[in-house]
Image (cartoon, rainbow, N blue to C red):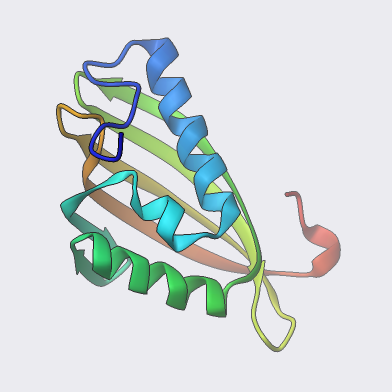
Length: 137
């Protein structure tokens, strides 16, 4: 069912860990259509300095992101949770069209609706240039 995304809040440790792993798996597909289905139609995002409203803008954002961030590989880790909210730490690696590799670190704050769809996502991200041989992911 497109308008429900299990597990539903309020989260337990087990279901919070499951939700984070599902997000990691989806983002690693680099499929904007698939990823966007985890968010409400009117989802609100802050990604770095960009403000995104709605599932359609999420798809457009992700298309732009993965056209720029080549070889993308992501790892997420649950930092904390309460009721319908989570804090997640992440890192991902990617390279640009010139071949320069980066490791991007950050934190996300997530809020879910009663159907398990993410209503809000606020991400703070920093990029570190790395050499290809320094990759961990």
